[in-house]
Length: 138
Length: 163
Image (cartoon, rainbow over all chains, first blue to last red; front, side):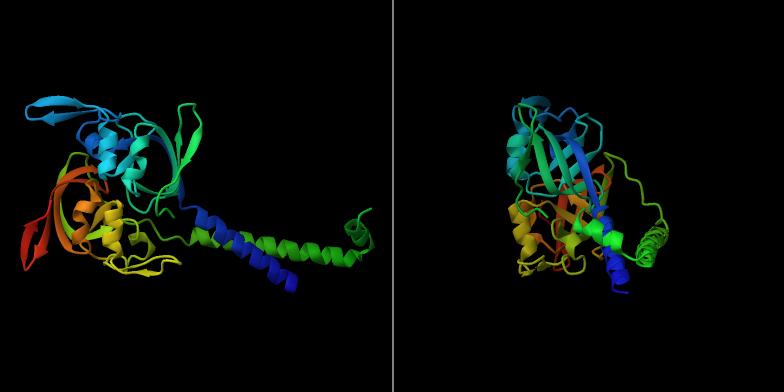
């Protein structure tokens, strides 16, 4: 009888564990500045075109500056403009130096169009995935 | 021969069968339970409204902290939040999270489980207004993501522009 209970308990724990993990999602793409990209899809790199009066001006390192200010960062899926964007539920300043880099985030998606990161990795210049420490992650 | 193999060789055929029967029952129970779980999921909810990118939209609701709200939707739409241990109950957590840079959002209608729209703006700018009733006019980035043009808070029955 003890054996039956032990096996059943193991089975329930296994099912509980696997169902918990089903909320996890992984998104892969490029880190972008959600505000400038929202204004113009060409703004998916670090340098942006912004409106100054009647003219459009090129702003170098704009994505880094925007993330440094605290404007939420996002993941542009596949890095291609027009694809889905997932807003990263974490302080944007953490990503300032990684803007426009390839990123891989695993976490939960509690809201439409957003991801709450559990693990964030960016690809470095040598093509290697490096984990980024993000304050207050799950 | 190892001890385990020796023990198995000495075991009565009946006890081996009994163990197999118990294991079979446990596995059957597991599959039945898994099947019940997947079969008992709630029916598909009503189709959510579709929003177009670039669409202008206005809404009223509560200004919430996106980091804590999913952890306890009833409590964490307010100012003080329930956090996992060792943090526990944190006073003025919403303001602290916004100051730290966690994106803020409007909980449309202010009710638990209402639509959440994350605001594409600097969170710290709105940190002083967390958990307050707000009105936002903005542009849809995608469903659930809004670029705010104007944010107002209700003060003494009047809407005051805060962004």
